[in-house]
Length: 272
Length: 331
Image (tube, rainbow over all chains, first blue to last red):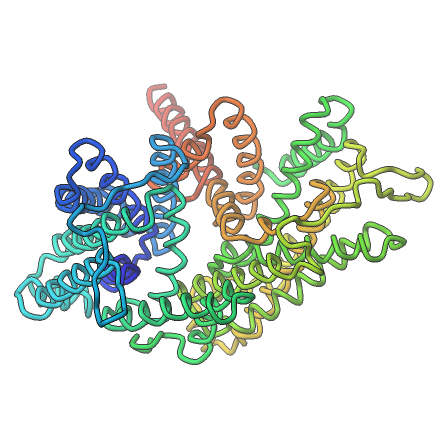
């Protein structure tokens, strides 16, 4: 679910603007660090859950406005390289400020402990919270995409950018908004991962491969595909570690290569 | 520049490099050897990205496979000459490049980047886990005392910095020349036609798949040799040679120099090595400076340092031309 929160923003931007945004995953990391900082200052996790995603959304919008739009005309490769360089810079800045040691974030006291699901099955409350929150965010996303006027504009721009623009949709504004939304989602993922895995500067590297695998397996730009793929990738990883630990490292790449070999456009991607 | 001037500068450059160990100090001799190795690597990447327009995110796989193959040859067959280990490295890079090229044959653009990334990560995982052959995360060592026998000149140890410099220079020169030559052949022309428009190349009757396979294999060969040189230089092989950060470093090098021109990646490799060395002596955060430099270059000079220099020189010559034009008018 966490992977999906991050990957969905990535795949939306990819579908809309045809940009593989490397900086997206570093926005996720920034979200986690803002969460750490806010809980340090105010000792209030819920505040962090509101502040950090908003800050991330702002960061995403800034990236769109000042980096991506600047070089949008100059070729696919340059856009990709620019976001890649940006990711490098953001990761290094975070490393500079906070060092490379993992920093703990305390989950709010309401979410500590665990819940009895059945008579003898215990499940940590915080994980349930993660599930519920991501579910809510997803429902909200789908509502916006499928049921609002804005969602129609977004979907139209994804389908055919030039045509949507010609028909009076302000594609530039939509792009900015989608970058913002994607970064907001990444920020939420960053905050809710913070108490669960602690905050450290290697988060970027850990997440980026998973995200790449998800969007590659699910099909570039497809939200539903990303959902299926993130479940698949998550399961492959956790079960791989349990059952075949010797090659668990390879499994996820095998999955990617298998998808590329069988259906290069991904599970739900459209054929080019 | 007239051709004769160009040849002259080129010869001067070669002479300077050949005489360098006698004039410069050991430290720079060492650094320059590293620059040469990275130049070969960057040039092998240029064959894919700059010349054929194939963006691979897994170039480190070819480099690392060459490095490991040479290392294994050096350790297992200790009576074989060292240069043969390099050739073995090159050919294993070639085979690896061929198979990677085969798997990603139909992929384009981002899909290609993802496919190569996944494959290179798989190879990395194998190098990491297959302890008996690769030594796992300990890596491999044990050839620093090896010697190379040269006819007429005698025996030299790999530990000798000056000798290693010449050894690397020779191979680097051969590799770069080979790449340059290939870009001039009809095959090279075919490759650049794929870069400018793959569909059109297809319609013209060019066998795009075969050309792509061949360039992947060729690039693997050159990258494999650079991997072999690199383990002679570092005296060790480690799984980090194969991982994603190495692939990205290659990308950074090519982009800093300018991935669209032949000289670009070489210039980029030199800038990269020297920046790494000097920045890391000033500040721990050298990657931040490098990253910022990288982003600014892309935003303002997307053709890299080489493109920047070209742009500036044309500006200067335009300015001069204007001036001259004005003076003739007034007189």
